[in-house]
Length: 249
Image (tube, rainbow, N blue to C red; front, side):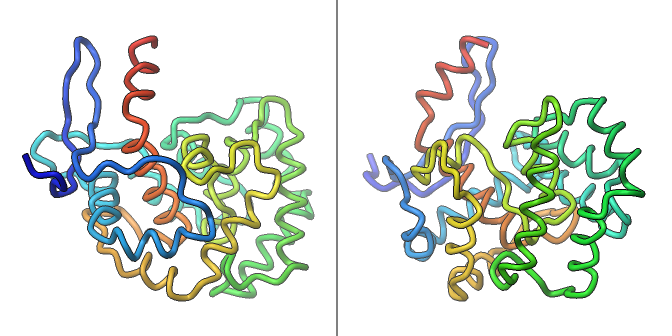
């Protein structure tokens, strides 16, 4: 048996549950945030396999992830003056839902939310802005908007981050419990800081940007590529936990 099998994802059926199982060199533990760039360079093939499995729709076993549609909705809503239905559809593709009461409130506030307008204006005036080059002053505006959304009933930190990432995909990093675990940042109160330091490194951004994306509906930005790679890697490292969780659903 090959001790270092070529990395690949394969669909398997266990009872009534269908799972995506990673086959490749076992890796365990966490990837400390300051080592993410180094890990990417050491695992280029592995990272590319993660991206292709997530975004591709031509696999022999026809196993696909709903999240691969996220970019399509994000692109449709990119020119909206505030939040549009497409942003909520994008969040839904990532397996969370914004409560209907919050959606209604956000639509009612779209025309009067100066915080949202200010963030959109910053983005409009700086088309090449990203989390890696945004000023502290501008980033504070997005943090303020985050706090406002987070204060809405039913808006947890994961849903809030995914909604803001749908509207500002190059500035707001998606937050997910699996990625928290693989980075060793469970319950971190400085999530944006950690992700900002990762993508602040130009070499890391270049590596992320150079990965080919199979059958993508729209452009996939640096933050999203990082999120998907780490999410898939977290799944690869925690397959036993995932199997137990799915068996109890």
